[in-house]
Length: 156
Image (tube, rainbow, N blue to C red):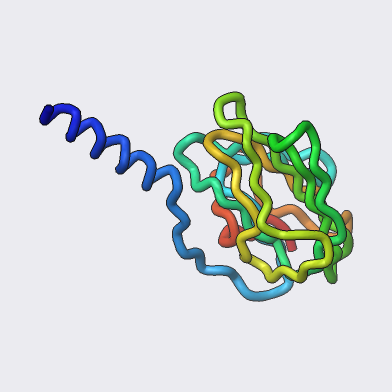
């Protein structure tokens, strides 16, 4: 009986760890912050692709202030794109789930105003996120770099 209690405790602690949402220090200024925790997999032209590992925080945050112009659901609930109108130009954040959880949750709707660093969604377990930014911004992160949602500046 005691080993079942310990097992339940371990599962509960794992649940708390995977659902954590730590406070972030949102940088001020005219810059874009990462929409997701993870490791940069690729940078092609103005698109940054981020791998969200199983141990990363799975909440996504807005890269800057703006208005949600569109939320596009794809393939049921395991992929979507969020389009933002910002002072920098149009920005698209795409999110898709991994093979295990297959669930992308969105907390915002078309027409909503969102501030830099605000939480707008969550992906269960391992997954990917990409951000396509306007060409007038300079990307200041590198492939292989680990970044934090709402805290790491990715472009200026």
